[in-house]
Length: 138
Image (cartoon, rainbow, N blue to C red; front, side, top):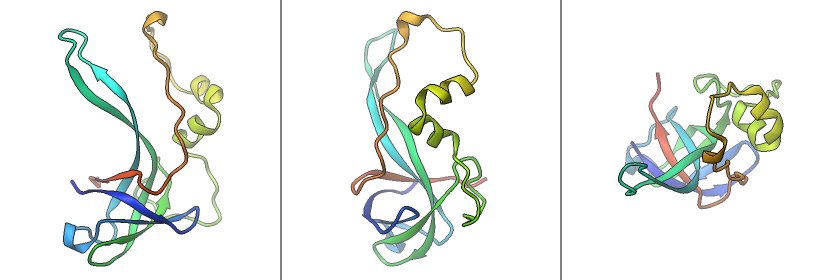
């Protein structure tokens, strides 16, 4: 697993991350851009389990240099597909961010105790400094 950050945003479909060949990045690798949620505690022990993460987007490495990589946006549902300039399909995560009420109606529901729902935080747009992590390819 390789971790880094968004170093620069070139456009709505291209970002530069601060890890490159020196960190083991190779052309074609996938990275997820992450938003950090709140601290989660173990219900039995009360000990912190860590902060949960929500994907903001996925990118594929297009060009690698020694200490940085140029990445292009890819659809979340089809990480192996190349971006297609003629297709403008919203991923499930994009729908959830842009239309929270509608996304919840589309998602399958669990039978949960209403008092235990803490709610999803609002996920901001991709920003310089957001964490990125490599993703295993199937």
